[in-house]
Length: 267
Image 1: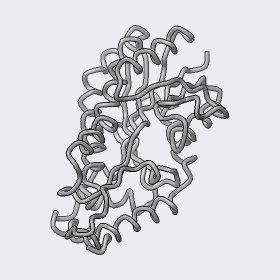
Image 2: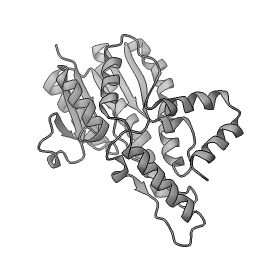
Image 3: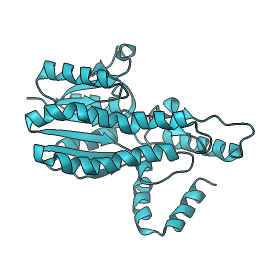
């Protein structure tokens, strides 16, 4: 039987690429969107789901289980970007980002675990970010929310291992997607002491996304993980220097690594 896959945030970007790739490989794929009616030409079946809304999550999971009798793979892909000087980002925006990037995936995991436990099988893949391995200037909230998801996955894995349910993280670097368009930008304030530097960093971040890798690379990596009997805890996917930055953080003194980031962002 084909494996049944649920991908949150499956209407565009990395989620869409993963869904279409798995569909071509013979999987039965359900993607999610808060407004699936806006994507009438989607190759994968989209169901309504908002990761901030437990009722919509449970409804989507119940629908899939009723239709298919099983749920084999959850890919927690839905996420939101956020930028700005930490001093100036409204606290409501900080909380909202964690609702999507951290609490959202946990809600979906909790919704699928009973079915996977009943099956005595399942795989959960959390899409995090290489940014989650380090505190990046003007992306601190995003780094923190993705880093929190990386860490909680480590705990989840140990708690669910006796139910034959696997869990892993996949941390992408910069990919050519529309994430910049949907990112929350703290406004560049005319009287802000961060105005010039923040404007320059924003421009640099957008250039990195525009020149990023093809999302197909992520889809291929996710496919390999699904085919792996015992997935690793952490995977990193992206340009060599992006992945190598994580290695450098482990081996360099803190202040040396901080200086490297300061130079990279021209701060």
